Length: 248
Length: 382
Image (spheres, rainbow over the protein chains, first blue to last red):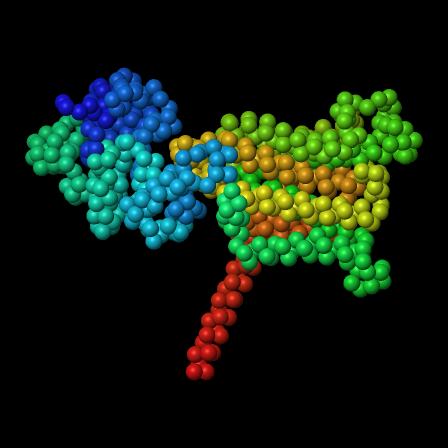
């Protein structure tokens, strides 16, 4: 391997009352790649996200982040988020009463103390980053609207924007197109595709159509282990995958 | 620097709103005193003497409502115990007023009358320093603030929220009421502190003193409003709203909800203390009945009636309800509670965002439909 991985899930096991959600799972994510994770229900996709973000502690194994070899399993959720690992949950968790721009300002502020937020205006650099994010997620026109009034797809993009302004190195995206219209799905695919390169993007999704549009490399999870990994067409023709998932 | 402040002021209010505030503040702070002290007693223009302390009292209660709206409307923390901070501020200044009676009391003693009555020989340590105005005034802010900080730290750290928090604040009120009812705690027991005579050497019975206290209350309310408005229009204000709606998410974004809540909660308590300190010399008494749990709930009604989360609504609500209370309890004292209950039910049922928000809505709707009507007429004339 020429480059060191951005994120390395190293032999992680998580069990809930005897049931193994993750079974010696090992995954490597390269810098700048866009990876899709698929698998049937209970395959361990969400548990894997929970372990990376510190929500769930593994029974054994490590999660190693960047060249500095930081073990994420020893850090709190807040600390992991501060290191630059952003997670977008399935349900949008934006602030309905604030405007689109205020939501982004809240997420992208450089000072997060009482004194700073009370007295200091946002620095010019942060303002630019927020304007940039507004462009990327295509909500420039909507910036003064209350976030609660946005359409479902726009809410999801706003939440992605809130992650972007935090300048993450790794972006974990949980079912981004659930409940979206065809147009919104196409727009989301474009958006996620434009995010790779500068950052590592990991997408967990059920929608196969969507995955076919964006995926370069797909990982199939089954019963807490990697069942197959590779380009979408290769994975699709893998008999094991067809049996447990795609064929079903 | 100047430009930054200009921008902040423009964020707080538009030009039109600032002018409106100036006009209202001018009427309250200048016109009322002139109409009280200027015209002769028989003149129809004159605001009679008994109204000035009454208005002053309303302004203090409005400041109390404002303090509650800051935490309830913006941070989602419903305190049903804001009377605690109000009463502590009141007691602190009341103690100074007791001390400044000197030996002019009934028993001609240097000790407050109730202590002589209890056959105490010297001042308890809790009263030390309260013969000086500056100390009492400082304590009227520091004691409520310190209690709020300590209470809030434990309550917010254990992540008490919603109704549970509200119930704890009721318990706090009740505990302090029982404490103040006792004679041996040394704060006048059941009767509280009263029979005040002078403040800073001026007689409390002089009309000019009453006007000065009224003006001080108006200034305090104005200052309190500006501070609150500054807070809620800052980025911190947005963090508060975010905490109110999704506290977990805010924590995930790297903010510490505990610190933000403690800040605004303590600020609110200090404002309540200030309101209490100005209230007591104008009504002439502070006793444990101010701490009755129902009094704490009433403040929430004022805020809900005016419109929660608007600041101005809290002020308007406090003025409407207390104005109505003054009139109604004089005319039909037995019906007041029914009226208050009915008002609360009607407002929450039909004007859930409060009377002020509804009224502003009607006005702007009327204004734009008026403009439309004018445009239509002009079109027809052509």
